[in-house]
Length: 466
Image (cartoon, rainbow, N blue to C red):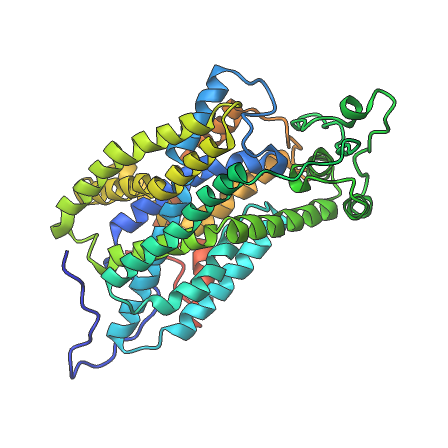
């Protein structure tokens, strides 16, 4: 694919830059964003409706064949495939904004910095007020670093992307290999871990009564955030967010209130996630690699109809290589008796080859936008993608109204089948509502606020009548 030039011809007057006009929108980008919304929702809803300590479990209520099937299908098709797709799209938007600013002879950095600041603030508000698993703030922090690489050539971006992806994959395999070679220090024979009985709806990690006898005193779930912090400080909570005492208090505060306690626990969960996933696990490098991969594809003209064959080839690689390896990774990690090394190999396969499935979705979205642009479903998905930020927050808001104490309080009670039904129902509503909204307005409300702050110019919101 030939690289797209970003040089402005000599003598041409600078053009004003601002929000992307509808006439120059890239349909494939919008369709891909719409598809990513569905995938990320399937992944997110489980931890929107359950405590962090439930991560990796099949579900708290009515496990069975249907629940297991949804669990494994989500892991194969969407988990660690949806956030790479969103990350690629983020990188594409970065390069697109840089190239258009350069072609118009306008500054880029100050406007993109404002854009990232707004994204970070929206992410923090989303994470604290609604759900700790927000990724917008993470994207903003990583974007502060990657934005300075926007001028690079496509090939350089691709090389740096590969380096970034290799870092967490080495970490994923290196630690388990070292732990299998180095014999861990043994604990004194009289050492007894302090683990509480698991509350209802939270998987037990072992119980103190079983380890220390029937008459052992079992710590109770904290009744306030102050008591919860006391349990942390005195060492009664020994397994962080995965400790039953932590999960129990999280379930109690989110489902029953008070709201301030739920906000405080969400803050702790968000910080824990930032330290573990972005830091210790090196996922920040993986996300940055996906940013750069998306930027390289955009700069190479991926969405140009002339490069349709390349999109077809990427789709075939994703279907014939990415999906089978995703199934293999799930087979390795999906059994309770799986060894730590097998889990590491599964994680290695997911990090290294999961993005191939993301590229499959990106290619299918591009091909659909080119071939079936007037199809009702394709247009609906593209409309949802044009409002991706608004729809992303809306998904959390609707689920929060169903599961949190200020709503119906279903937190920790839904099984996989029920959650999948909510995903399909809410996403279908968004496919219907997004085109209706865009028939009256030019963009989603959060997109409008975001662009206003980015360009310091109020964009038109109401669509002019024909």
